[in-house]
Image 1 (cartoon, rainbow, N blue to C red):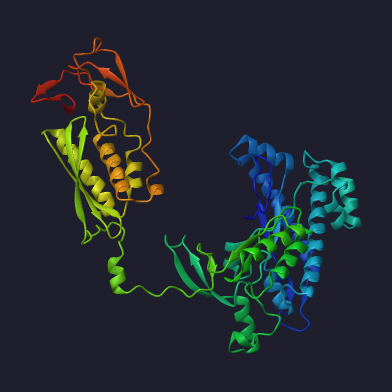
Image 2 (cartoon, rainbow, N blue to C red):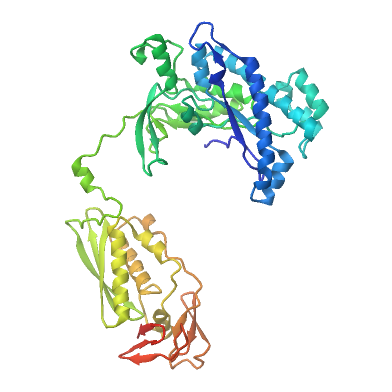
Length: 514
């Protein structure tokens, strides 16, 4: 079960999110008389609501689709949320998940929704309610009845609402990391942890990160080790998942959209326990929740595991670097495969390793002479090069997509000759490679893809057996080929020359061997 999007939208809806850092509203952090500035928070939420509404107005005409512009105009959703919740509680000396923490968050959430509703009503006073506003439905809403105080109800009754949705809670992963506080409604992940990133380096890089709130507390109190932290400190891996659901549940009562949230679980958590978690989340009326079990096969963004040890020199040598030509394995053996193409017989040699069940090399020998022979050899060399540079069959297959078929294949099949599978020498080799791997017992799932078959209209050579060489069509293996005059170049329509079974065009360089 995945997480519901934090901002459920109608068709054509556009997401507009903003977040308030709760940790900034705690005065006298880490002191016995620390307190949360509710009045300043109320004012901040009002300003943030108005700011998001103004951004909506600015961005609405810039939306790319008319459907989006219409939907945003009709409903005017915004999504104001929070982050820094765990930092706020630690500054107040309150344990995340405790009864006191739930009570504090209940009060903050109620103030937040009332401040946002009142500001939206004031916006409606100036600019009118959103077009799809339904006064009767609004006042029947259980959400409004649960959250709105008397002054909020009065303002909505007088002015309506400018926005159909106001609050949501995004994960704020990047934002919270940038500012050094906890994300969304999450507890702090750990006192210190490893972070994995790809975007900065183009590959997985893991580096050590220390949670700033823990570091600041230890410095302020002169602690030497995190084992000396007081009992109100905890993290995602120390929390009971029921406390985690209780926290999300209290926020959901004040959030009119949804909440993005992940419950971290120890590796020993069973399937039955995860099932129970989801059932309890449903009973708590959560709109969405995600779980992550430690050491799952798919690594999370944040992990507790040790950073990988630096690779040895031997390991680095074995690793294929970008653009590096791989060495052939010692146990490589070459298997001869006989193909019959539109240009004649073709012997393909497949270099295969039994130890890793992979093809590492290819080369071909064709009977005959002329430009086509060299082109086939070049194609096979390029295929082998792709494998030696770390590619695979699907890379080759993708490269062939859209190249079309060879006129010689189409012509010979039209004459009734039995050719190897494929529509060109390159695709014939590709199909034969797949057959070879099947014979070697390679996983069928690996061979499930086949070259895309397209409807083709190609220049091709006619044969004297066709009665209308100027305009003749043949259908071969689902492909349509247009046969043009044997004596005219199919590219420039100039006269062709015939030499030793091959034709060529002196004007544009076109050539073909029969």
